Image 1 (spheres, rainbow, N blue to C red):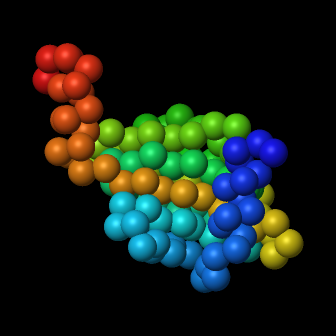
Image 2: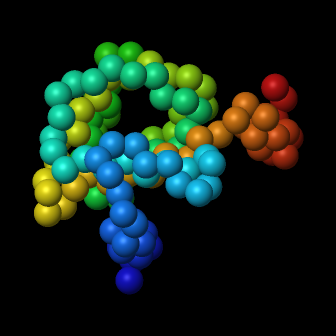
Length: 117
């Protein structure tokens, strides 16, 4: 079984509400939407975003990026974006994971790679 399918099975077993669901892991959030959305404007925290099911378009600096379970989005700083969910339904809701990183974690990772900051 593909890892994405295992992850999808795990997420589907959770009792998720529509919207952002905080998990027992403080830096992990699961987002669920059973509907496509209009364009929303927000600021992403430094995070890794993984879509497990569905599809989304995000606009960053006037560049549109369409992504789904075959791609991910990583933001190393606070990032203003516009986006909309373009594939979601009650039978197959949009599901994504967000792993939020602190600046300390980002700097520690850079230092471990011996990069000059």
